[in-house]
Image 1 (cartoon, one colour):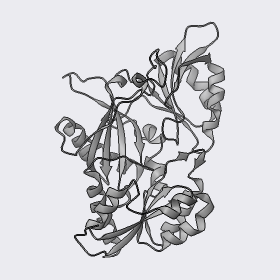
Image 2 (cartoon, helix red, strand yellow; image 1 turned 180 degrees about the horizontal axis):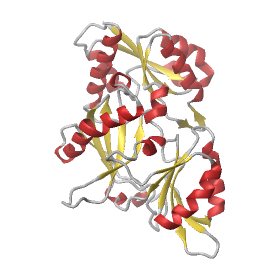
Image 3 (cartoon, one colour; image 1 turned 180 degrees about the vertical axis):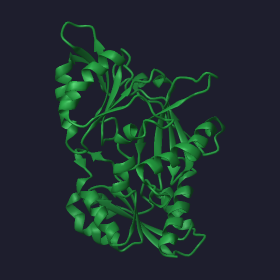
Image 4 (cartoon, helix red, strand yellow; image 1 turned 60 degrees about the vertical axis):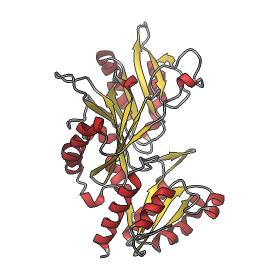
Length: 352
């Protein structure tokens, strides 16, 4: 790889895989190859690090030998959580290497509870939190009857796991129509009590359920605002099918699949109003509310927005539906350079 500067720092790019992936991993065959190249161009030698619970000690040794660690690992992957990995990363960070995103920062901003904690910011909605299964069973039925369709979200998850659209149906016995956000899911009608019981497992790892109103403009798509630290690194716009009833052709038909995410750089004119809100208002307000300083912000994260009701002047409003801080990828073409600049600034502040 061509470099503009001599290598002054070393980092590991950590992702999940098995022993075979770990053995064969190189910067060139990694899906993060553009990130490796951007880091090399600013004088940072980056190496792949593949994590699995079976090689925890070897990964720990690898991470302790570098200046920093960039982590791309989903909260849930093939039934495995990040419990062991998060403990490992806390141990590594306590011994010196810089870790992004640090597990404690993810617990502040990269879980669905952030939607409740920041509900009073300009991106907020009528959001509620159920801390226990008993509270959920007691409070949710009345809210559903009074407020119309709702969207429930388990606190930690990815890929639509544990995200449900729920609407009440007219029936002598309380009945709901639910649709899971996992790809290929179909609407299901069942007694409300049975659905509530189904959700009890969400009060395990991660601990709560978040409840938001369903956004009627969901068919207009989702805007993903990519951030590096506190600055916008790009945007993605995607027409999504999750939580929209599939067509009669069935869940695997082309019509039922999400559209491609169209990537844009940070200067895309159609998103400048959102950029100003994110950089000047919402991100600083979130950081203050959650007690996160700029040096601790993830080097790459994203905020997913749905379109809210238009304002009095006919302009778009935006409703936050998720923040991804554990494994934000794919990313716009401009994002690797933004990541590299942020990483170099962070490492230089630790070891000039």
